[in-house]
Length: 255
Image (tube, rainbow, N blue to C red):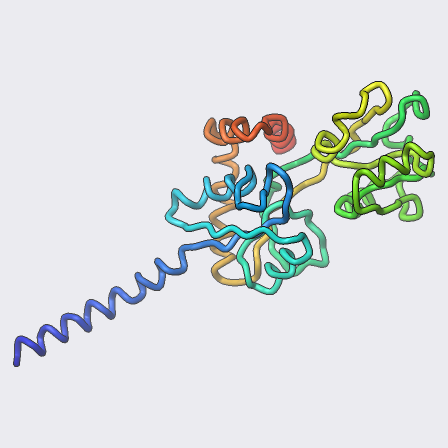
């Protein structure tokens, strides 16, 4: 009887000390979301942006659970605390999220035009009083340009719509990131279109407002740059065929 009581006491003590450890083990996971961007955040949970997160957290014992949603739904889920983290975010002031200290990617912003219409490019001031067509994701960034006002900007939902407007002289320039340009317009003869860089689009990791997410953000901020500057990161980007993205971001972060 005494032995049985002692055994029960021992079990209770073990349970008392193990319970916090078990709870901690259960919380060492990250619910990560992103929108579908081919190659970066694929619908099956692969892609170099997702792999970047896993490369940082998995060696620290975290399980990274990945889901892909349309942009607005993914944003709502993170703002509501249903998920911990989102990659591929453009920082905006009206969002109730915490953003990483530095962008995890920087993409060049291009002004794209028909060569015969704009043979004398004079830098960003060439955009003044011109009709600019662009996707909604880039509008907030373009607004910061001192040569652009909101009355010049035309929003479209697809790159094909922007190109159609340009070709029919309903717009003077397409404003688009270099990644979008390479993805959508590479099949077009380089003799007909020209592009000039006018700035950078900074792409961040965003975190919900919770104790857990604050810890995740701290880890990300501490480990992102050391990993990004490593040979392993360079090899990972090369494996995904996005070495140019890597070099662009590397150059931007080195400024």
